[in-house]
Structures are given as C-alpha cells and as structure tokens.
Image 1: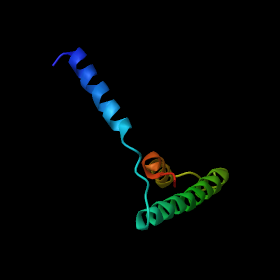
Image 2 (image 1 turned 180 degrees about the horizontal axis):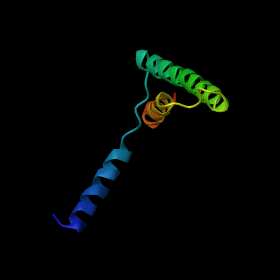
Image 3 (image 1 turned 90 degrees about the vertical axis):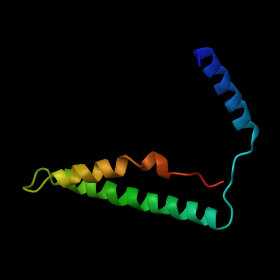
Length: 87
C-alpha cells in the first residue's frame, strides 16, 4: 500500500468518524465519570500537599527522597488519560 493510498484511507476514516455524534455518558456511566473526576481532584490536592511539605523539608534532615520521586512519576503519567469532562 502506497503512502497516497494510506492517506486516502485515513481521510475516509476521519470523515466517517466525524459523521457520528459524540457519545455522552448517562445514568451510571455519568456517575462514574463524576466520581473519577472528584477522586482525581482529591488525589491532586494530596500529592500537591505532599510535594509542598517535602520541598519545605529539604532544609531539614529528611527532605526529598526516592519514594517522593516515584509518587510524582506515578501521579503524572496517567493524568491525561484519567480526566473526562462531564457533558
């Protein structure tokens, strides 16, 4: 398959995809989306407070440790995939 054929197939798929209306969650699905967003907000607050406390403790003996780095990495990586706007 040539690049021109792939581009034509991609254009056809794009047209077909945008012809369909977006799926909006209703009922239990909407509740799940709302709970997921609230949980994400709570986790954001907790992780931000942890980072603030650890950064302010750098001057003391404990400071920033390897576990704090892993907490930040585990928080940042799935954030974009988790957020879903509530229609």
